[in-house]
Image (tube, rainbow, N blue to C red; front, side, top):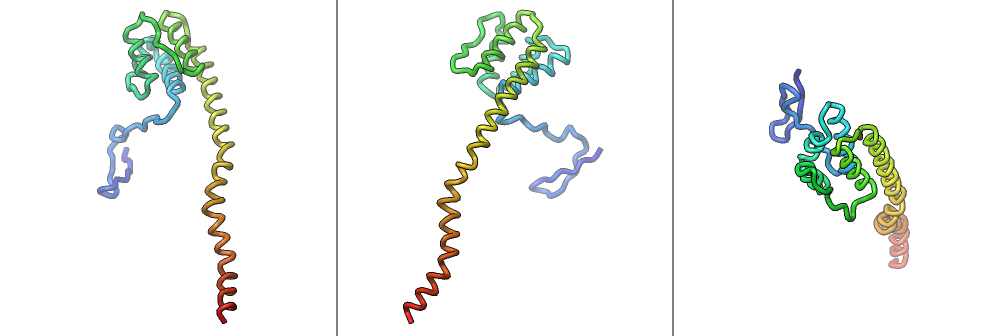
Length: 165
Protein backbone atom coordinates (compact mmCIF):
# COMPACT_ATOMS: atom_id res chain seq x y z
CA UNK A 1 0.00 0.00 0.00
CA UNK A 2 1.37 3.43 -0.89
CA UNK A 3 0.39 6.51 1.04
CA UNK A 4 0.90 10.09 0.02
CA UNK A 5 2.06 12.42 2.76
CA UNK A 6 3.11 16.05 2.69
CA UNK A 7 6.35 17.17 4.26
CA UNK A 8 7.49 20.76 4.79
CA UNK A 9 11.05 20.05 3.71
CA UNK A 10 10.83 17.87 0.65
CA UNK A 11 7.36 18.55 -0.75
CA UNK A 12 5.67 15.24 -1.52
CA UNK A 13 7.03 11.93 -0.32
CA UNK A 14 5.71 8.40 -0.29
CA UNK A 15 5.32 6.24 2.79
CA UNK A 16 5.42 2.51 2.30
CA UNK A 17 2.94 1.54 5.03
CA UNK A 18 0.86 2.79 7.90
CA UNK A 19 3.68 1.99 10.33
CA UNK A 20 5.55 5.11 9.27
CA UNK A 21 2.70 7.40 10.26
CA UNK A 22 2.32 8.32 13.93
CA UNK A 23 -0.98 7.74 15.67
CA UNK A 24 -2.45 11.09 16.73
CA UNK A 25 -2.47 11.68 20.47
CA UNK A 26 -5.69 12.45 22.26
CA UNK A 27 -4.53 15.83 23.53
CA UNK A 28 -6.76 18.00 25.67
CA UNK A 29 -9.28 15.23 26.18
CA UNK A 30 -10.90 14.67 29.54
CA UNK A 31 -8.61 12.11 31.24
CA UNK A 32 -11.48 10.32 32.99
CA UNK A 33 -13.29 9.74 29.68
CA UNK A 34 -10.08 8.63 27.95
CA UNK A 35 -9.30 6.21 30.77
CA UNK A 36 -12.81 4.70 30.84
CA UNK A 37 -12.97 4.22 27.08
CA UNK A 38 -9.49 2.68 26.88
CA UNK A 39 -10.15 0.51 29.94
CA UNK A 40 -13.26 -0.89 28.29
CA UNK A 41 -11.22 -1.74 25.21
CA UNK A 42 -8.48 -3.42 27.26
CA UNK A 43 -11.00 -5.38 29.34
CA UNK A 44 -12.78 -6.58 26.21
CA UNK A 45 -9.37 -7.70 24.91
CA UNK A 46 -9.11 -10.05 27.89
CA UNK A 47 -6.80 -8.16 30.25
CA UNK A 48 -7.36 -8.06 33.97
CA UNK A 49 -8.39 -4.75 35.53
CA UNK A 50 -4.89 -4.22 36.95
CA UNK A 51 -3.17 -4.98 33.62
CA UNK A 52 -5.64 -2.81 31.73
CA UNK A 53 -5.14 0.09 34.15
CA UNK A 54 -1.36 -0.17 33.87
CA UNK A 55 -1.57 -0.26 30.07
CA UNK A 56 -3.95 2.69 29.84
CA UNK A 57 -2.18 4.92 32.36
CA UNK A 58 1.43 4.18 31.42
CA UNK A 59 1.59 7.24 29.15
CA UNK A 60 1.31 9.49 32.23
CA UNK A 61 -0.37 12.24 30.22
CA UNK A 62 -2.19 13.75 33.21
CA UNK A 63 -1.98 13.82 37.00
CA UNK A 64 -4.90 11.38 37.07
CA UNK A 65 -2.90 8.95 34.93
CA UNK A 66 0.10 9.26 37.24
CA UNK A 67 -1.84 8.66 40.45
CA UNK A 68 -3.80 5.71 39.01
CA UNK A 69 -0.63 4.17 37.53
CA UNK A 70 1.21 4.36 40.87
CA UNK A 71 -1.81 3.01 42.70
CA UNK A 72 -2.21 0.06 40.32
CA UNK A 73 1.48 -0.76 40.65
CA UNK A 74 1.34 -0.77 44.45
CA UNK A 75 -2.09 -2.39 44.85
CA UNK A 76 -3.29 -3.54 47.46
CA UNK A 77 -2.76 -0.16 49.07
CA UNK A 78 -5.21 2.61 49.88
CA UNK A 79 -6.50 4.51 46.84
CA UNK A 80 -4.95 7.90 46.03
CA UNK A 81 -6.24 11.01 47.73
CA UNK A 82 -9.13 12.42 45.76
CA UNK A 83 -9.37 15.90 47.26
CA UNK A 84 -10.46 18.37 44.63
CA UNK A 85 -11.53 15.66 42.19
CA UNK A 86 -14.85 15.84 40.42
CA UNK A 87 -17.69 13.50 41.35
CA UNK A 88 -17.19 11.44 38.20
CA UNK A 89 -13.46 10.96 38.89
CA UNK A 90 -14.26 9.78 42.42
CA UNK A 91 -16.80 7.35 40.95
CA UNK A 92 -14.13 6.10 38.53
CA UNK A 93 -11.74 5.58 41.43
CA UNK A 94 -14.33 3.61 43.42
CA UNK A 95 -15.18 1.54 40.36
CA UNK A 96 -11.51 0.75 39.73
CA UNK A 97 -11.05 -0.20 43.37
CA UNK A 98 -13.93 -2.67 43.04
CA UNK A 99 -12.38 -4.05 39.87
CA UNK A 100 -8.97 -4.46 41.46
CA UNK A 101 -10.65 -6.39 44.28
CA UNK A 102 -12.03 -8.85 41.72
CA UNK A 103 -15.57 -7.58 41.18
CA UNK A 104 -16.92 -7.24 37.62
CA UNK A 105 -16.91 -3.64 36.40
CA UNK A 106 -17.30 -3.76 32.61
CA UNK A 107 -20.99 -2.77 32.49
CA UNK A 108 -20.57 -0.15 35.22
CA UNK A 109 -17.61 1.26 33.31
CA UNK A 110 -19.81 1.67 30.24
CA UNK A 111 -22.44 3.50 32.28
CA UNK A 112 -19.81 5.76 33.82
CA UNK A 113 -18.43 6.51 30.36
CA UNK A 114 -21.87 7.60 29.15
CA UNK A 115 -22.28 9.83 32.24
CA UNK A 116 -18.88 11.42 31.57
CA UNK A 117 -19.85 12.03 27.94
CA UNK A 118 -23.12 13.64 29.04
CA UNK A 119 -21.26 15.94 31.44
CA UNK A 120 -18.75 16.83 28.71
CA UNK A 121 -21.59 17.56 26.31
CA UNK A 122 -23.32 19.85 28.81
CA UNK A 123 -20.02 21.63 29.52
CA UNK A 124 -19.48 22.18 25.79
CA UNK A 125 -23.04 23.46 25.42
CA UNK A 126 -22.41 25.98 28.24
CA UNK A 127 -19.28 27.25 26.49
CA UNK A 128 -21.11 27.49 23.17
CA UNK A 129 -23.92 29.46 24.81
CA UNK A 130 -21.36 32.03 26.04
CA UNK A 131 -19.73 32.54 22.63
CA UNK A 132 -22.16 35.15 21.22
CA UNK A 133 -21.65 37.36 24.26
CA UNK A 134 -17.88 36.93 24.15
CA UNK A 135 -17.75 37.80 20.46
CA UNK A 136 -19.88 40.89 21.08
CA UNK A 137 -17.03 42.86 22.67
CA UNK A 138 -14.56 42.56 19.76
CA UNK A 139 -17.38 43.47 17.40
CA UNK A 140 -18.23 46.59 19.41
CA UNK A 141 -14.66 47.77 19.91
CA UNK A 142 -13.00 46.83 16.60
CA UNK A 143 -15.49 46.19 13.83
CA UNK A 144 -18.06 48.76 14.97
CA UNK A 145 -15.74 51.79 14.90
CA UNK A 146 -14.28 50.79 11.54
CA UNK A 147 -17.75 50.52 10.01
CA UNK A 148 -18.67 53.86 11.56
CA UNK A 149 -15.60 55.48 9.98
CA UNK A 150 -16.41 53.94 6.61
CA UNK A 151 -19.92 55.37 6.72
CA UNK A 152 -19.08 58.77 8.19
CA UNK A 153 -15.69 59.24 6.43
CA UNK A 154 -17.05 60.37 3.04
CA UNK A 155 -19.53 62.68 4.77
CA UNK A 156 -16.76 64.26 6.86
CA UNK A 157 -14.54 64.59 3.78
CA UNK A 158 -17.22 66.43 1.83
CA UNK A 159 -18.04 68.58 4.87
CA UNK A 160 -14.38 69.62 5.25
CA UNK A 161 -14.16 70.48 1.51
CA UNK A 162 -17.32 72.60 1.76
CA UNK A 163 -16.03 74.45 4.84
CA UNK A 164 -12.59 75.09 3.33
CA UNK A 165 -14.09 76.54 0.11
